[in-house]
Amino acid sequence: MYPPNPLALQWLQHTLKAPIDWHPLAGGSSNQLYTVHSAGQLYVLRINAPPEIAFGVDRWREAHVLSLIQGQSWAVPVIGNHPALGFCLMRACHPLTPPLEPALNSLYQAIHELQCLPIPHTLSSVMSLNYPKLTQH
Image (cartoon, rainbow, N blue to C red):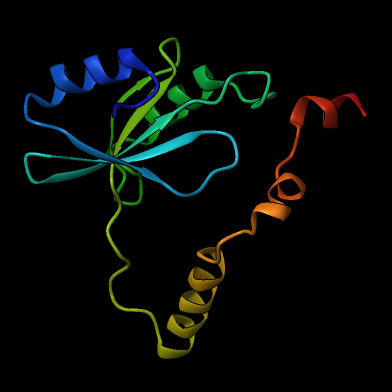
């Protein structure tokens, strides 16, 4: 199984020059996210949502802003951002250091557990948004 964007896979193989192990990431309501392991490194691959879903998102402006902040200690290192091809590869962030205070860690854990709760099939249609229809209304 490969990411749904064959150009992204071809680019990954050419750029990382090592075997690739990737897995879908739960998350986002529009973009498709994957973890990519290659040569001992961990990355996040974002396959951009189509403009009909991610309306108002300017991927070219985002790419420009990300290029401007590269090198800052707080910026996520971008390996490749290709708006025309529809994907962005970033080095994965590591857990915060120093460790969170115990109270904040408990809150973080509770939020994480809440986000991991499975959504019953009967509620899945209620939980998803039809963005084009929402915009029309």
